[in-house]
Image (cartoon, rainbow over all chains, first blue to last red; front, side, top):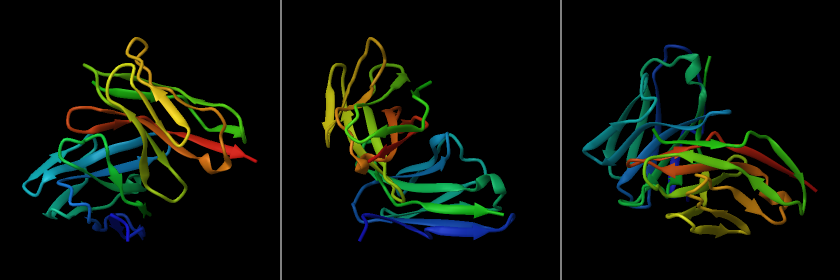
Length: 113
Length: 110
């Protein structure tokens, strides 16, 4: 089993629908991240969390929200999906003090029609 | 603010060719630098890193040297293989988080 698991792996939805992407990890890391990947734009940080009580906005948090339900679980929600949120979303984890060494899930491809 | 600029792709090479993917950065201080690789259908994984000036990171035949004077961290490999086909991302460690370049897609033909 993967250390960082994302569900669903693929999702097609319609404009205005609420979508939740889930991430769970077995690495025991405190820090978790959600990134978005778009062609030619690299990875952009949406939200990050350094522990269960800590949530921080990244560079593109508008239109998204997160929930850190436990050390091992970090969910990303799109309250009302729009087509320009069509992208590949990655969850990642890191150890405390090792912010640069991230461990990524396999990604969740979201298409908003 | 912190930023990373990579050479634009895609890059296509023949097997056994020499590879260079350029990466330059803008940052305050001297951040740690990283190269990540994304194979088709997978998440990113750390390829190599360097934590201070003149450090050389290396892994799987790839190398990159932290050049403070030119603010660069170019990725090199002497002889690429078809299995090296992937997207490569340069990144720097900013304040509590990683900043990525836009990625360079590499295709190696047999």
